[in-house]
Length: 323
Image (cartoon, rainbow, N blue to C red; front, top):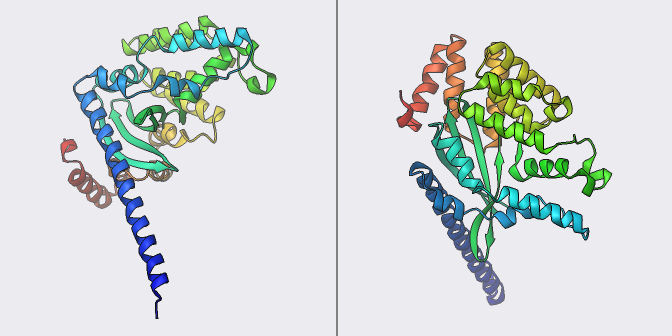
């Protein structure tokens, strides 16, 4: 027989559980609304919302290393001024999505501990990529404070922090700069110029500019990814070499499955390609769009029954991509 005291405990626990679930549902709805506004802003080429939803201060706190040195403080101020010159999120997204004509689709919201994340899929002429946005509450409102790009296998803040430390090595101790190349303002200018050349379709000029840089700097992830973008537009042979080189330098990186997919397909390593897609599917928490890749591989393998089944399933889930 259940005592009144035990009944009270059960009812209290049930009430708390319902309250927590309601709060979680409310938080998820708030984040989903932000995701839908991001998608709408990209479709409408609306820079204002994308600028407002990104918190540069919180992002910079994930990059900068603080200390009492006046020289370090001046360096931090200069670095922050540099990354503040352009609205970071809107520039990245509008260049990557609108300018390229790629499809950008909201996939899901998930919570890592207390922090919400928004996952988007980017698909266009350059293939597939995923963006994972990290949000935190800033002054009572959810703001994007960082972005994880699957093609780079790291948060944007980590990419920027390497640049930050490489350009200011003299301000940090040996443990913080171990294994890092020296990066000069000239190097950064070359990379910026090469990116501009890529956007203009001047791939050979961009390649020549990157190959003229010292080997230590060119082995940094930022440059390897740029090299992949350049060589993928020049020749299959050079592109395959760039992928192999990327895998050599970053063998255990989370981006390897995505980066190596083209290499596997061009070399007709179909079983390994299926495995890479399955690994990617697990990383992103499941994406029915990847049925298209599996189906295409089965078609190349002349397994037409499996190809047809997956193509039809893909069309049912993504009717706008039927063509």
